[in-house]
Image 1: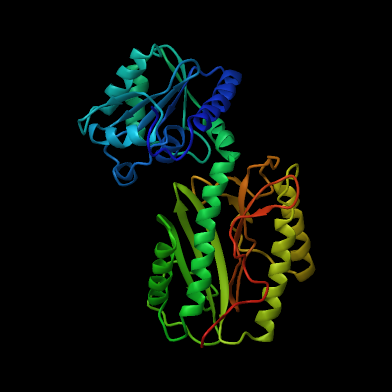
Image 2: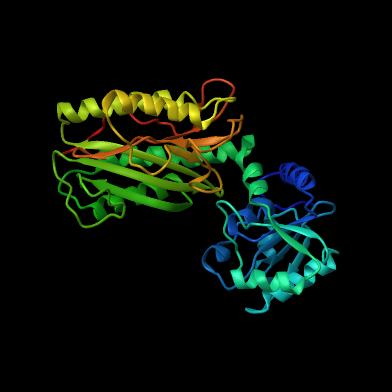
Amino acid sequence: MGPQYADFTREEFETRYAKTRALMAERGIDAMLVTERLNYQYYSGHRSEQCAVDKIRSYVVILPRDGEPTLITMPFEVAQVEQTSFIADIRTTGGLTGHPDFICGVLRDLGLSRARIGCELGREQYLGISYLGLQEVMNGLPGAEFVDAADIILTVRNVKSPREIEYCRRAATINAEAQRKTFHEVRSGMTENEIAHVLRRNLIEGGAERLSLLCVLSGANERGIVLLPTDRVVREGETLGFDVGVSFRGYWSDLARTASVGTPSDELAEFYDWMMRLRHDCNMQLTAGNCPADVIRVVDGYLEERGLKTMGVGRVGHGVGVETTEYPSLAAFEDVTFEVGNVFACNPNFSNHLGFINAEDNWAVTTGAPDLLSAPAADWEIPVVEA
């Protein structure tokens, strides 16, 4: 009998393993040593609350090219693992120290002491074990070769299954509805922190399980933007913006909205309308067979006509999934082709004398027009907050 509360089916995990193993075979990798928290979650199905806040313990999945995966966790996590993960080989280490030696012992026991082992050493990857801890593992297995396998993980996670997309859709809908509701409930004279409290309440009441970022931005600042809510009072005639990441079943959304505090000026209304047309034309490039350069080409055309620049962050969007922002970037350097199952947040945005002007929705790539995940979408006319 399988786990009672798994987020995905056994077949879904087998598909992830099969895709990973095919890439391992191409690279001559015998096993994957997965330690980063979200990669561990992706390959095990175990969403550990302890792992998210505790850096003293190691949570590991070992995925051999041949044979079943092995999971390393803490004794107190076993009940949760058994209820959520299909991995049957569960190894536990109860101490707060000695994890590298324990990992070495498991790898030896699995016949991998002389294997070529893929690790999270490269692009957009962090380890769930300290650098010195990984060095201990490497030194403890002198006959093994440890190589970077970041590209394998990025490639496999990039294409989402229908169930993954539905979790992203639920997270995005919660986010969109809460932001719209908050604009209706707040007013000028409130502080950013007071507005953040209302927004946070609406997100949680709407079903958000976790928050990764909650930004409240008001007014204009020539030196950039202030993302962290402060006690600054929001005034009539300014803009008020949100940029928020929330999760559902371990999958995230990343949405932004901008409103006018009181009736917008003609200049603000026109600029917001222009930004929305730019944004729409960018979003329509998110179709299978296109690439990030197609999106950037649209942005460059709009900017050239108006003599403007974006915020200068190096991209105009990014992937969304197990993380609020993940591979790949919507950037000129990114050499990828969009596939059915990609999920993106596309948000060319601007900070100027009007304020922070942004409207970010989440989309799933299809063979035709992209699938909006974050209904209700950003309004074509700038929303108005009561003055």
